[in-house]
Image 1: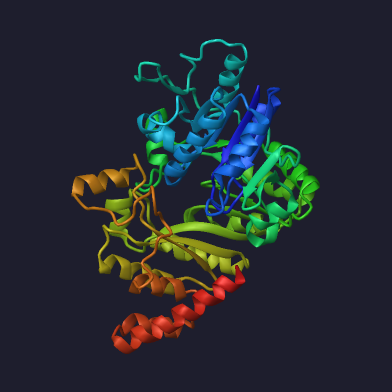
Image 2: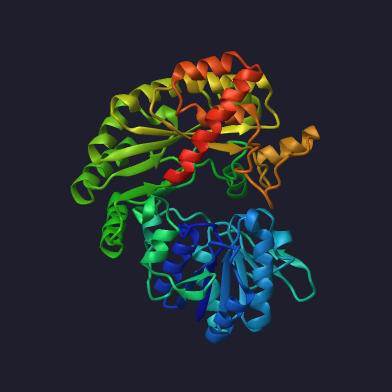
Length: 465
């Protein structure tokens, strides 16, 4: 079977879902291509249609998030127009959460993890066998009715999945010039840090059920308690060796696991082998509670340079009543101290615009930021009610109309005139005494000073990035 996978992830090629499915389908013997469309502002139907008409793929798969829905719908219409005999399937979080809406656009969707689904779906199509009862599929029948099959169980042994690879012969990019082979120049252009990083995951799932996160729905879907599934250390190390050999610009490794530090034994083995065989700087995601002296010391010895960790809010009320998330202020401050002592840069996640918080809650966030050791960086987000999350249910129950529409805007759609957003934005970069004064005195003059700092710092950060 000749299959085309399409990534719609904006401004990036690190769509791990598409990369993994490419590796799985290729490993099963299919002729696979992967097309990146990272900039929909320069997208052209003429260029896409020429590429499709020339290659005549038997099947096309799109990875779709909620923010991709309308664009994916347009792309699907073009595929159907120029490849009328091709089978089209959507996978990803949106068709998993809203299968009926997605099946209003395509005949097939993949629900949940897609590795098993794509292998069996392609094999059945190749043999011209019925796919009607394949697990993991959602199907729109000829009479317009919808059938949702049972899910495949979660993959327990992640080592059974071939690791991702960048195939310079069969990866393509659609930009303003048309469709061309994806090369090192594109890898660099659509990467942060000038292409120095390589992104991967060593595990799946998360032990938490935060109300704003889709994991809260996925756990219900699979009747799962959030058990972390890990690749073996040797499997991870083998991928990283391959990445170093095949991508010459790689200078650090970016692990985007939801929670990297959940097994002391695995972490100890990883640190030992990573230092000996990879020896590159790396960064991870972790909860503050896991950033213990022992863990940070091991990670530092292995080469860690940064940790991204979630604060989300400084308000205990927000965590308990809104986010359904554990919160220990002292653990966050202790983690800050530990990271400072070992010269590891913290990158804190904060949801600064939240329709359910009051100013007292947001003040607690600013006060917490002022207690954290410097230097640190902030990722600032807007609370976004993604479909099927617990936070969406809270909006519906409360009758609050969210400012953010996950279909058209999202968690980076800040109100840049907001006092708390401006304060959080400047906090890591201004002298602490200035931050305390701006927090304490909020009159017109203080607001003008804050606005000045905000403009200067935002301009400086844009120039750096």
